[in-house]
Amino acid sequence: MGGFMSIGLLFALQDWISARNWRYKVSATLLVEAWVVQYFLWGAICWLIWLWLGPRIQQGRLSWILTCVLPLSIFVSVGEEMIWVLMFPTLPIGSSGWSYRRRLEFHLNAELMDSLVIFWSSFLLIRGVGYYQKYREKERSSQQLEAQLVNAQLRALRMQLNPHFLFNTLNGISSLMHTDIAAADTMLEQLSCLLRITLERGDAQLIPLSDEMQFVEMYLELQNKRFSGRLHQTVSVDPELYDTLVPAMILQPIIENAFTHGLSRLDKDGLLVIEAHRIHKRIKLTVLNTGVGLSPASSEEAAGKGVGLANVKNRLELHYGNDQRFLMREVTPNRVLVTITFPLQFAVDSSSKLTGLVRDDTGSDCR
Amino acid sequence: MIQAVIADDEVLARQKLRQLLRDEPEVDIVGESATARETIELVRLTQPDLLFLDIRMPEMDGFDIIGALNPEPGFTSPRIIFTTAYDTFALRAFEIHAVDYLLKPFTLARLHSALENARHQIQLTKQSPVRDDAAKATSDKFTKRIVFKSRGRILFLPLSEIRWVGAEENYVRICTQSETHLLRETMSRLEERLDPQMFLRVHRSSIVNLQYVKEMRTDADGECTVILVNGQKIAMSRSYRARIQEWLHR
Image 1 (spheres, rainbow over the protein chains, first blue to last red):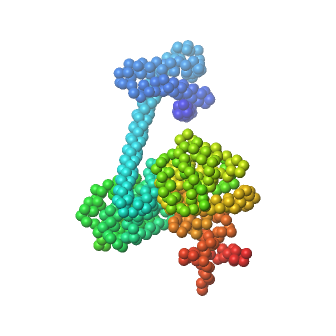
Image 2: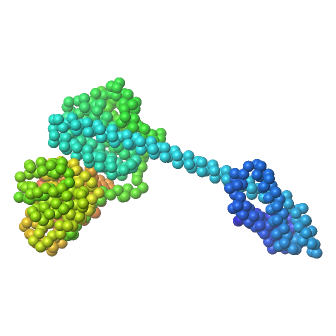
Image 3: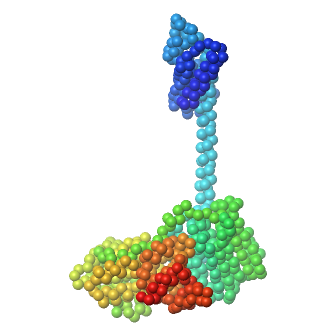
């Protein structure tokens, strides 16, 4: 409506300027009124048409446009003119004493084409808006679909990890049971704790590094039960990275891999070093292990054929696209280093994590 | 001697507890029960010191059982150690001040520490059977233990087991003899909850438990260090030294 009114004002201004140029007197107020009312009427008409026929105009076929919209355009143009002529009996200038019909004819002669142009411009505008909305909706839904797909893929990958890790550990417990009941018992408890943590996380894809490291440390304790005394581990994490978000269980498969293909082949002095550093706006996670280096078989692993590592790579790709690196190489003979880097990202509200303390109110009585 | 009742609807769970408690000479199992009603009757009859209680029982849950065990005159309700596979109840268990909370499956080591807590509390009760509210009020100001989730467990950690606490950015690391726990907590908030008779802040980023302090050293260039009984060194800053001097002279 505002748009139409301002067009009216512009035309009034133009008329007033041309009147000054041609040196004939005209009341500015009358001019403005006439033009503004003219376009106000058009605005109202177009708005009503939009309300009633909007969706049909946007989807209407050519046959409908020709049979319905074309007559409607003429009818509406004439109708608008009739109302307008009724409202301004003094126009056109110098028409005193003319009949209503004569004045209407005069104006129709002068303006029917303009009116039709206004009508059809509005028609095209409405149709254009329709196309645009449809296009935007398509884009939105395709983006949503894409996000859903990525989420589904991530979920599937996460779900693949839990059983994988669970069965491997159960297998370890099962073999330990024959030799050391107490150790197997401890391992079961540790496994329960690990499962509890994964349950608590629900299906959160990204978790604070502190949580991931807690999981890693527990996993290491559990593995230590099997590799008792044959292994030296160090874990070092830059404390300023505790709150940074990392994909859940991103390190566990890499560490499991270090055990399965490297450390398990050694009978003493195994070394496992896990580190998390910040490099500008990126986080770098490294896992170094001794063992037997990269055999052709484990090169296949590196190429992503093993469940665990392939999983890590896929998830990094899904989360960070091309903005991530996964590198596995033999740094010195029999020392394998896995490095992953991806952008730093902090939780919007990291305080929502509830590890808070609970007040010990020993004052409350037993009921 | 601690008299204990085991209440659990699962035979295997009771059997496991019984086996583990066999190695505890101080604990005497005076009865076992498998339903809520049995448990209430058994506890009234035997008046045990300690009750191992499964939260999920047929008919009623463990909390209802405690509610039904309303202490009558001359009847001291037993100390409770909850045993359960669900941990959503932990904080509620804590409100009715259970001694501890064993998540199934638990190991002998976990049971040990729970029993240690129970033993301590039972001794206190036996020394002063009438509850001394005035004495409690003073000790309540500072917690005797803190409760938090760490490593997939719920910990009822007695303060006396904390050797020292270090700040790491937005986290604090609580160090005991055998493990460390990372909590998202601030030093100042934690310090408020620790008894100043027991804990001393020696640095912007460290608090030590005085029980475990072996010595304090000042080296040639005036740097101070606190040395713990296990040989661990913790830097002390000058700004906190005055407070420590004060403590030494009290």
